[in-house]
Amino acid sequence: MFVISRRAAALLAGMAMVVGLATSAWAQQEGVYTIPSYKFEAGPQLENVKIGYVTYGKLNDAKTNAVLLVPGTSSGRHWADDYVGPGKMYDTDKYFFIGVDVIGGGNSSQPSNGLGMDFPRYTIRDMVRTEYELVTKGLGLSGLLAVAGPSMGSFQGVEWGINYPTFMKGLVLIVPAARSDPHFYAIVDAVTGMITLDPAYRDGKYDQNPTEGIKRAGMIYFPWLFSDEYLQTLRAPEQYQAALMAFGTGWSKVWDANALRIRYEASRNHDASAPFGGDMKAALGRVQAKTLLLTSQTDRTIPAYLSRELLAGVKNAQYVEIPTIRGHLGGAAPLKGSAEEAYIAGKIRPFLDGL
Image: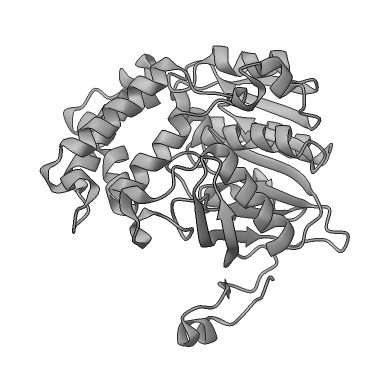
């Protein structure tokens, strides 16, 4: 059920399903959909699973212009805010966009609700299955125009294409892959290790979020997000220090440590070929949607060879290299007003228009 209520009523009630934030045709509308019971891929079952989301734009009468925006590993439903609006990368003059908090963070069910590290270990496929419940039962849609997202969002997009091959016409996969590899395992294992070394972490049974461990975990991740060429531009000590601490500081403000650990484990362990006995060709052969692959050749988080694996396996795929020295973030989070943002928008807008 999709209900719109006034902000005042929502504040008084405290539990409104959807809160209207503004009144223009492309304004954000916040919501939470509850799945009565969900069984995870690994086996556990959880009652009243909440999935947070936000919508932008206007759904047309035929309900054929909806695009699901799925986030990267440490992002949430608002990851695309800077790129959504009239005439922007995600153009609200034409399309209805749904940003989602995948299970485990944001306004969705997550470890800090009480289970801590006992929260079910969810997979990318669990994310997609709960998103499907949101889109079909929560929002009443029988199909999507497209699914779009960067990094872990591309993992989700691939799983949408494999598990629901006729549900959407297009996939926009940014800095994409269909699986993680051992070098990403090493990144995540180091990040996790740093969080757990914080004495305040207390084996995940902390009373206060161990933010110092989270900040230092971000320092480990920092050099993998950019290229060597980009790092050479950080010549002033204060500029380097700010960049070094930015990612971990951002994590510490919005992420619970257990939620962050479990979320990155989901990305670390992803392999779209797993349900197919390790046969990636068989897995990707199920994808029917027209696919746009936007890759960064300077990406050290998701190396280009993993993106090329998608190109080799998806039947109807267009492969584009983003001209950027900002590595993974040059595609996953292009700077507002930058040439890389304009380039990516210049590929996405005509792709959506052609679906």
